[in-house]
Length: 118
Picture (spheres, helix red, strand yellow):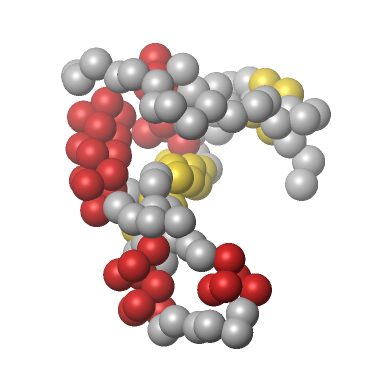
């Protein structure tokens, strides 16, 4: 397995009110979203208007960075023996949706399962 190092800017605060999830129900499914960098920051005028882009233009100019998608895909495959169920080309999101038994090894990556009210 390749050496994993924290990426600058990837730190996240703990989710307020989250509690340890305990044992996983291996018969149910879980979805995990991995956020990667965009190709470039989306300019404010595209968010507040009046400029617009088509979905294809948004994906091409500001979607997920292909190098980051490739690296995340490789690491998830090697470390967890999983594959992404969905890659959102418009935004920086990669989604895993698998039975929970497949996620047992995430603890060795420093990932904890928690429950929180939405």
